[in-house]
Image (cartoon, rainbow, N blue to C red; front, top):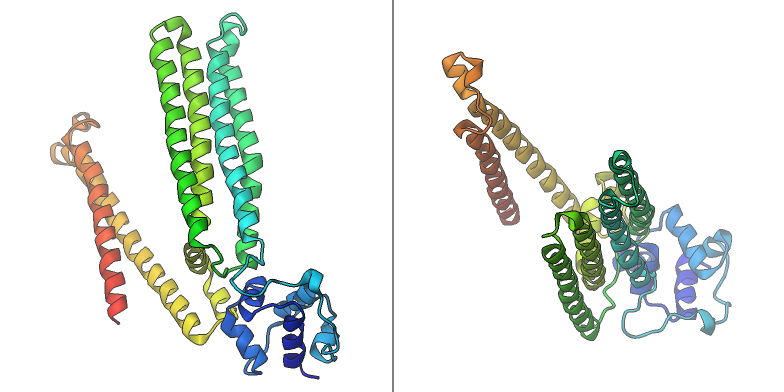
Length: 344
């Protein structure tokens, strides 16, 4: 029995479409179609993933006969509309908790540090600065405990699932937009509450640090709210996820990916275009920096007197303007190169 027959039968036992299998394997639907048409053959890592999905051995999958296996209703994948067969939604929801919690922990550390820095009755004067630094560092460490694993998990998920079929409905997106609107308003309201504490308590110099504590504390709550619901809204834009993952792939990954030649060519062209734009913009910003330094020290060069250097004078303004002009040129170059590339 051929690999094609085994694969088709195994999909049938799970009521699994080609799109759903492609999502689980991190390939395009066209790749699965070619496998079943015997126009191409999956690489070893994909074969091993297929074995994991259908709980069979590699020998049975490639050389054996699995067409006698009966359907497995308990493990079946629902037919019909696309479903989340790779755990994308659960992964994004976990990110929506970990990332804002990490950011809020850092801000909360600053808030607590400010509180103890101004607590004259609790902390000796000479120890306040040191305690403030320690508390802030503790907040940063707690934040990193959430942020670093979240980023690593997300990178691993992207490598395992470079393509996700869009399974969200318009109702799902509408609910996400509604939740984000409420979360955004709530987050801004919390920040305003913190500003209110600052205005009320900040007038008393003795309670200034307490006011700053409440300001940072409510900012932390507000930021948590905004980031949390922002990620939940962003998760429904599966097309953006697929696009961003494709752009982050290296050329070697694109060449070895199980995708159609047309898709592969488009990805390679986008990658090369991005590298060209990055190189051109890099040169522009280097030139802008050189020009900025020349303008900054122009009075010294023209007069020969080092004391004529004024970091707050007109020459300093031109120094920063050189970077602004460089950034604008980069934007123009990016637009023109993208437009020119599309015409080609």
